Amino acid sequence: MAYCTSHTFQIPASNVISRPRTVTPSVGAAVSLWRRPSSIPSISNRNMSFKCHAISKCNDITPIITEEAPEALGPYSQGIIANNFIFVSGSLGLIPETGELISDHVGDQTVQALKNIGAILKAGGADYNRVVKTTIMLADVADFALVNEIYARYFSEQPFPARSTFQVGALPKNAKIEIDAIALV
Image (cartoon, rainbow, N blue to C red):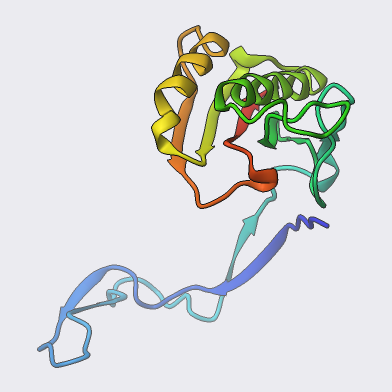
């Protein structure tokens, strides 16, 4: 459960605000100190309020649920809408109806993973052109060129999303690839 708060912090005003006083540094001592000039009246007994406002309300978080993409394999959502962003969970090359990998080939899994992401984006009110960031996790980085070629078919318009790609030790269901995405609503 997420909590959002807004607090007022009562922080005493400081006496040390404007001009440096020199000290001879020793091991572990600060090199410069600041103090209030004698021309400024003391404000140390007053409190100054600093307000911290939450960016959004907690009820602005909406899960995305669609039958056009595989169900989550654990306690997470297919996607989340929050603050005008869609956060798509890592998607494997799973067939939505069966929950099984489409094949053992990285190319087939890449196409299916991207189709699954497209379905989640659509259910959230976006499409591939609204994606701002992706992360690609590969079981074997030697598959990068093929994955990149397929990826370019789905993300063909400038500006391209920012992206990270790396090899991982293992993926769920012994998949060859997993892709997640962040998009604007």
